[in-house]
Length: 506
Ligand SMILES: Nc1ncnc2c1ncn2[C@@H]1O[C@H](COP(=O)(O)OP(=O)(O)OP(=O)(O)O)[C@@H](O)[C@H]1O
Image 1 (cartoon, rainbow, N blue to C red):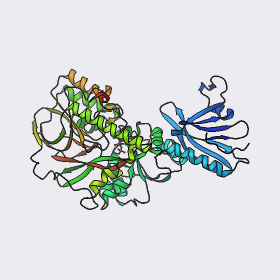
Image 2: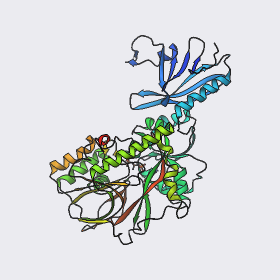
Image 3: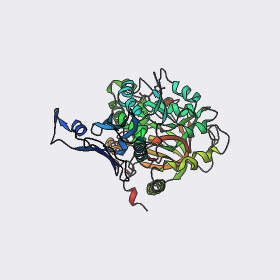
Image 4: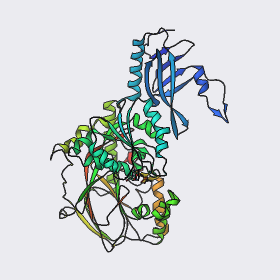
């Protein structure tokens, strides 16, 4: 039975089937499909036969008319909170006028995508050796079907060697794609940013191409922060519905090199527990914890000199800054009627792009080979246990080290603690990373900085980690570039909850 869609956005088909856009859901009255979708226990359906079901608009991937039928693609939960898979609804139009259905489809897609770009054109890079090694399977079975259902354009490459993603991104036709999606750990996004950063038109490339992440490694920090999950299919959905978001990137100079870092730099217990436990790879993710415990009990210290361009020195001020940043995001979100991501395309990266040509922005503080600027705070640390600088909050699913990190505040978060703590206190400190109390722990110093220099002392060999990659054990200097990079994020900001009590700071 044909009906024109009315302002209440209901489509009515034959056999008592109707589909309505109601609030944030698509409400489907169709007893046949509802029965198929019924909750089951040991293969048996639970409860009486339902007459309908609803689909969150967030899960609606696409809708179109094909072969005189309305076809709706959506993501349906396959395992609660862990996994979604692509599913389809199909209803014959019969005598219904196609133009009316087309208008209804446009309303549906506008509400389902809000400010997110539809049908993103993606360059996909799959690292078959990432993490536990299942990236190809994850891509083919969990992710590709969702992207295809959302009618994205996909150009897929399986990487064959280290460094390939750098070359691909250095030569990519940036007008042919909207996003680059590494299916990997955090190592491939690092290569992607550096590939884009090597181009003569680096700033335009980093601004125009958004980097998104499908988590296939063991840490998957990028996906945790941007997609709010380390589950590949949920990350795929977050990318489909995700919005362009500028993020700060950092320049690292060491010797005569300049590289980009998007995630973190570390020296001390964290760097060693990650990079210095390759012999324990057979332990899987547990090798990291074993590495930490070994060093806690041996009271390892890492003497060094650190010079810092401090911007916010005090934890209460850091919380207040975080609150201001969140409120600015929320204000923008209300103004745009969707995500806050639209704010910054012009207000951050582009402002730097106006100076000094098209390549990477000039370094404001020089390189590691220049004199430390006079206004930097300098300190000599004999008992450093951990130096950790972060640009995102979660470093792994349960490791919210940089609780107050903001996507594009133009500041890096630095935490430092001594290494000669009693083992009990040290274990307490490290476990507080999981329960969200790390930030407030008095044994940790937490500051927001614009730049710093780290110089190791009294140690010939050791570990320095830049985004999880090992670099030479030599002095290095880092400065931040506000909003230089662009990513796809679920909500236009990092998904981490922020430092405890930030809402009530003044
Ligand atoms: N086919 C390949 N063979 C070997 N190395 C590769 C290949 N493709 C990419 N790489 C390299 O693997 C490195 C690590 O990649 P990635 O972050 O994806 O996985 P991972 O390090 O195992 O992740 P995690 O640290 O989370 O376990 C990257 O620096 C990349 O250069």
